[in-house]
Amino acid sequence: MIRKPKIVRLERRLTRRMIQVQAVALLLFFALVVFPLGIYPALRFIDAPPLDPANGETFAEAIRPAPDGGAQVEMTSKLKQLIADKPGVWFVASTEAGIKVSYGKIPIFYDELDTALWEFASVDVRPRAGSPVDALQLERHRSQIGDVMVASGGGRTIGVLSFVAGFWALFSLALLAITTIAAAIIIPRVIRRELRGLKQAAEQAELIDIDARGTQLPTENVPQEVRALVDAVNAGLTRLDKAYAQRERFLADSAHELRTPIAILQTRLETAAPFPEKSRLLMDVARLSGLADQLLDLQRIDLGETAMRPLDLVEIAGTVVGDLAPLAINAGYELELQAPEQAVTVSGDEGSLTRAIANVVQNAIVHGNNHGHITVEVTAAGALSVSDEGPGVAPADRERIFEPFYRVKPLATGAGLGLNLVASIIQRHHGRIAVTEAPGGGARFTMALPLDTRADAAQP
Image (tube, rainbow, N blue to C red; front, side, top):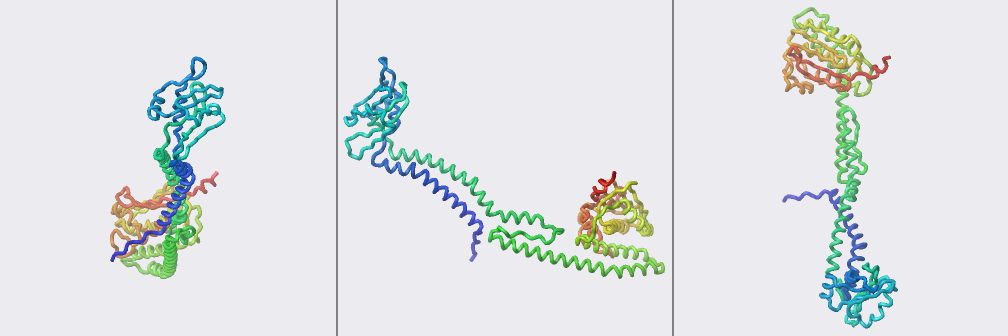
């Protein structure tokens, strides 16, 4: 039997909140609009429907000035239609100055009404069912002889159905307006308030980086349904931090332990009698020593034990070229340096940056097919490139060669860590490294480092 997935409670909570908002809005609308304007008047209309105010307005529009200074009634089309529909309709109208005009048979009960029309603001008389007394409506209207008080009876009435139909049209428009406002303003605010904890956690997650370890997602204001996920992510980050710290300690300890036997091996090779593989072994030992030193460099940088200071990139390149020139010449290369005469100042750690450049030069010595030129070039923009005339690097491999343990061609020595360590060191110096094709057809490794602006500001 397949179990149906449960509905997420956060969704149910948001839905419930939205329903509550809509329900409150509808209750307020019903209490403030529907009942006082619709239901209550409609209940009173059932037994005694009121006269239509349009009756008096139709009569007022038909009043015209008389030649003798009084008033007379003109049979307008609207008045004729009203009389045709309601033959028993009657009217009495009076101005405040006492000008009177009437039409139809006025009930005896209202004979003296014309003497008191202006004593009232408005009158609405609805007799009980079966009463011989006519309904009466008295309202003020505008006519061609001025404002008149019009008393009328026997005309059209407002039926309950027509009143309710008109009211519900207004009700529908008002209801649509209120629910639209609630949906557009209130509901999004409620949802944002409920999800603000998730937003804070997402913003904190954007800051997670390998260089900012110890980061944890906030759990305050996080819905209970998501709290378990946030706690699991935090626990995973803690485990990753712990594993990363253990890995760093292992690499640092291993590199430190390797330095002594590597130094002993290098000394013994240098003092040994010449033999065919001596130069090759010396170069391999130099690379091993460089890898161990680079591992220690990364550890010191990550722990903040290294102070970045202004360095002359031209001077560092010259030191590397001078140190590796015998090795390059012995391997069959011509090693040269092209650099501007003025200093190119960057900010960095001298030891790690020197070893990273040396690693790239050694890489050119190993893969340059033991012939041609190896050129180290420094530009005023803070870029250092190493070019050789070997087989180069295929475009498909130019990104992957900086991955750990990746080798374009399997070799008898090396594990493919050198370029990865170089890229890590350059990244710690806020720079970037890339490989392209050299002018001579070989590989060209370019390390771009930001210039030290402090050194420029210190110059007069």
